[in-house]
Image (cartoon, rainbow, N blue to C red; front, side, top):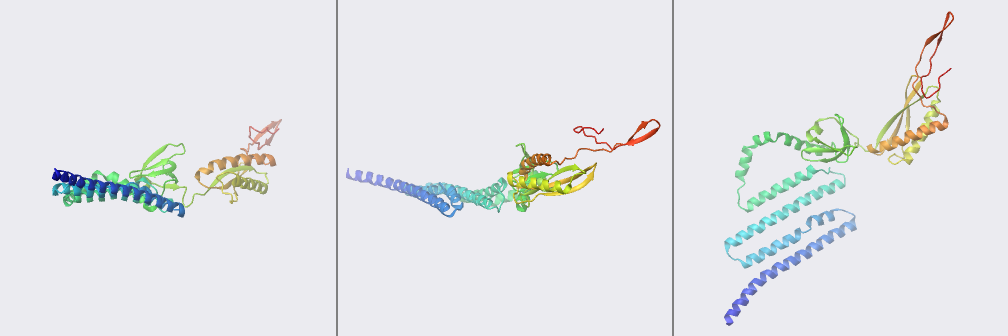
Length: 367
């Protein structure tokens, strides 16, 4: 009876110790996970950096998982002493550890890329993150195959032998993939840039993926352009080398106008618009450049400066309204179409020439 109780107690103790060890590692893992996460976020608040938050997000749950796997390995190897079972459990836990660290590496890699984007050193695109994830996933798969004892050399031989066929079958996708990588390497365009293609499409670049670049039109529609097309086509990037840009608006006044006065009034209105309208560059002095004389009018361009491509529309809208209103106040008459018309009036026998006459429906005809 006593021996039976001792055996039962010994069995319960052998079962309890691994379970207690597993529970202890779980508690320690949870505690350590919380401490590390809060410490990294506290570092962010103190330093004003973002790296702590990125690391905390990537490590969240991974520390607990690592402790859990370690505790499970201790508990199982203590409970089971059979070599076959121990080896199987060891391989399983190792595979789970490889998967955990592969996921952690992928999150850290993409996190550092996003931090670099925030500092303006790298382009934030899906293709870059996807390429990094694919590389890390490949390393993880190769590691898992090695853990399971699967030879890699035959697989590499098959891939090498069929490389020509694979290349031909994937020629178009690979072309677009490498074109996307080239876009990143050359910084030709970045997400957020406003571009115009030679074919006429224009809009904001929203993303560069492994095959396609997505452009959002001003109408909020999305067009997808293959990366190879973006690389080979002539395009205008309105955000390079800087987002600020000049806008030119054409006007015309009657030829008898005081051009010095017209220029001064126009510059005053332009300066007012630059300082008061959102999107204008407040310290920029507008320019007036007369361009020609034709049809009894003097044509000229007014040059303003805006903060980005989209700002040109409200700035030009407000400038035209204010300028025409100021012209009306100070007596400057914008030009209307004028044509020289020559004819003859018969008065008895003599023929008398007349003209030119102004052809403008909004003004009364000359008598």
